[in-house]
Image 1 (tube, rainbow, N blue to C red):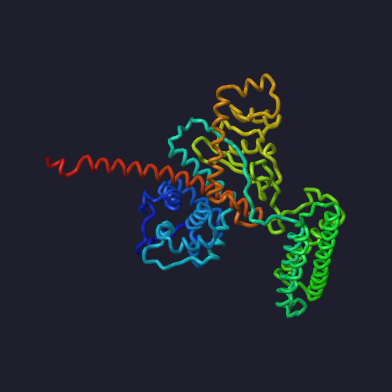
Image 2 (cartoon, helix red, strand yellow; image 1 turned 180 degrees about the vertical axis):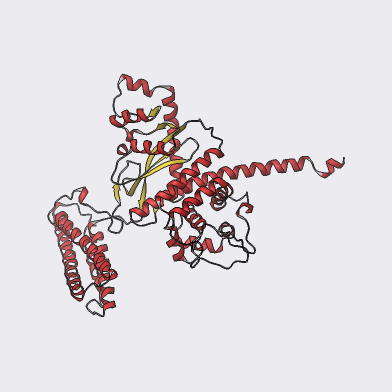
Length: 500
């Protein structure tokens, strides 16, 4: 049984619209909760979001029968809080069970002792899909435009830029990627053998330690600071010898793991669980074989490995090696994300870029954003988005294209880029960095979810959270101004003045 929200209030529960916040607080939690309160008290917005949640999350689940599950409203609140605070599930688990104001937003009364389990939060928040979050974001932005009193016929002026969302990986080298693959191969095979009563891998902890010792030896050989040609050649020979020894140890355990898998296959893989175990182990074996081949080619044979052959994480294979030319940041490991923000500081659209450059997604960003918000007619970019085809295509989509060209400008291009509107939009383009910084502070510095699907959900939820936080900040300022007017009115008409 799963409902959007429990209709029957419990003893001690406060209606969400009646929750009060300390306006002197400078923490993030009250502001994001104020944004969520705006969603709840805006009846039209709340109904549209609740309808989306009902149709997209477990639509087949009964609303009257079965064990009560986490309400859809609470799923959305927990997901938003997690991204806004840039926290992991452990901190989220602590907050939802012990933070009083947050529990009021979740519908728990003063006397309620109910607490969520950690796994419950993980399972339910992951039900939010990128497509669902994008639809919710469209409704939210429309409500935000109404809040800032945007006129119906007012044009939207966008600014588009990309940044790198780092994945949670260590710096990749051939030898430590091989160790990752070997560690998982040995551990998974050993645990499977324990379950089946096979004693071949009873010393698997020692085996992993042997592989790690060989890896450390290979690492340390490369740290020499010798300058003489003779010593450099000797060190190079020692490096090759250490890497060969490391590869030999790894290959020995790979051969043993392959034989064990053959024995398991002879016993039969009757169910899907055992078959999935075999597939998972074979995947790590394939990673190890690739890394052994690359070590032999690069270190021993002196070959250069092509960039497209390299893998930068065996656990997060979507990780890319990205160099954006930033000062002090030679390289970033992650995926690129492109966002499009309007003049009211709401993010209209975003895209997770897989093996794509800025100029390849320029037109797509505009067409997709215009499909969602038809009033978008001006947008600014930086030079990385430029190409001749993009210039021509965008002029058909927008009234004004602020896309600086690369290289020497023609007379016509120079006239276009020196126009007052072009210059004005280009100067205001840097404001998009504020949105990027806000996203990175509130979740998009390092992705905590796994897989490319996890990245897409994480980014979509961060964009939605950023817009909710923006609404919360607007409402927070309105509340402060209201309290100031109220206090001024009270001071103006004090009882002693009235009596006089």
